[in-house]
Image (tube, rainbow, N blue to C red; front, side, top):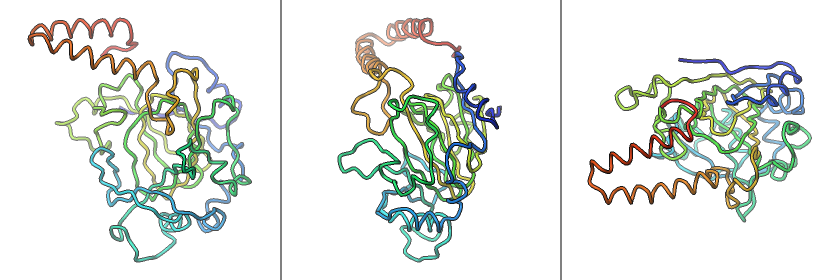
Length: 316
């Protein structure tokens, strides 16, 4: 089952979409955004971007497999100069100094230049690109900004299905990308391991291993250069580069600051109350394990029923 993500073509409709209050927020796209500067026209030439950007080594993912698997690590972490990465990933440079072989693929999620492990800030890390790229941040207070990340990928690279605890804009600047989404209430159908799905090939999932995945409602949109994609927190998403791609990903806190882990640099830690509840659940399970199996099953079902009544908005 597939549904389309809503696409908006004017700023007024886009702002109205972002501001509306509904029980379930959904992703959406502003096609051909007019407030992101001249980056779309300028960065389409990889040579321009490679010449414009300040060169330095960056840590990248390198793999022969398009479907990157975070659990089984079918990729390696390598250092490569940024200019070299742009030329290799775009296919402009012919070379023989491979990490694996001539079929290798590259993916960059820039983790920042700060040696102290501070949050990533695109404007501070790439001031030379500031005259080309304008932040589309009018939809949230500037003091809510969490991080802003440069992403670069070879064609066909697919990043594992995961969710974020922060709202974010994904600004597609170069190339096209397919984004697939699942609503938060589909969590039990996605075979989660932490914040990521165990289903690596979302186009051809194994029906014996992942039967529920096949029936999970998914939403699909193909991003074009100049598109701004809104990804609500907790929505599962899987991103596939249909061509050489460059994007800027902007994250912000949509909830009260006290709900977020103050030590979270990458924006991938669950909200404080949720993390506390998870730790409490571990202790609850330890208590139930003191009981015989039939008693454990009985009281476990009662606890599940209480959670269903108090917490869930959709039937399991």
